[in-house]
Image (cartoon, rainbow, N blue to C red; front, side):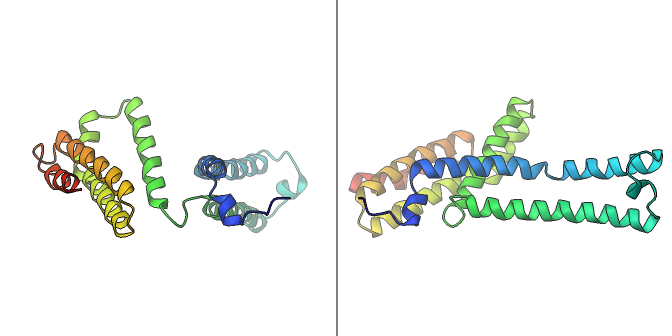
Length: 193
């Protein structure tokens, strides 16, 4: 019989991580539209109240009772959204390390959908330039490379520095800096090793 793996190891397994990531995406979409059913419930309450048809607890309710029903629906909506956000936080495989990267990736996915749906291309490019997303990613790759170098993992450092070099070229091509300005330092470091 095999020794059971620790829960942390099981939860970091790539297959489990992929399922958890997908669950977070689905739950996030549900959370985005979670208020709609409750809003429809309030509209249904109003229609039943105005038309006088339906259950007696609605048609014969006083104004105070009816306001209480509305508040109960609002509270149920708030409670549902809060519990859903907590479940998303709990299931998200990147809650503790790298969750910002996951959020950025989701935002970029949404941005691509906007481009496909006819977003103004110059505005998107200007926002991409102005946000300094590419230079920040470049600096993050460099920081990761330095951290791996400090741990003695030179192979991972070289891979990250190569990615940083390419990110520097992307940075120059998008229009932040003249070509080569960002990559010179990275290339020097790579040739020294």
